[in-house]
Amino acid sequence: MSPASRWLAWLATLPLLAAGCAVVPRGRLDDARSRIQSLQAENQELRNATVRLGHENQDMALRAVEDSRRLGEQDKAIRGLERSLADYQDEREQMAARLDAIQNQIREAAREIPTRAALPPREGGLIRTGAAASPPEVEPVAPAPDGGSGP
Image 1 (tube, rainbow, N blue to C red):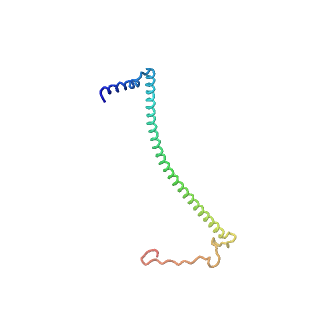
Image 2 (cartoon, rainbow, N blue to C red):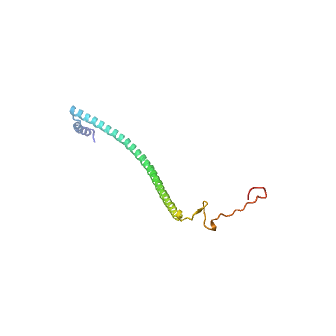
Image 3 (cartoon, rainbow, N blue to C red):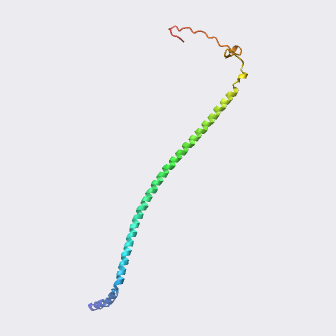
């Protein structure tokens, strides 16, 4: 390309450049600036809200973990108390069964004891019924050879 043709090409593009730089009314330019500023302020508010909500989310996640841990401990304690209660109930039932058995034994033993009307008459405060009722004779104990008092 020759220098003259370059110059003509440059002059040909000049009107195209000038059309892009058309004069904009000042009111429209101020309106665009105010909208840009309000959008930037809103954008900043949204960023701040995002950061705040992120912190709240983090706090809630930590609380959820702590609550979950506490609930696990409470469940464990409840299961232990339930087992203990069941053990106490079993022990109570066993003791009640033993008490019933002892009471039945006492009733049976009471039925087997003769009543006063069925007993033979008493002589001198002792009940005597034949030779077996006489008191056994006791032999005196000789002193021990070592001088002690008993066997």
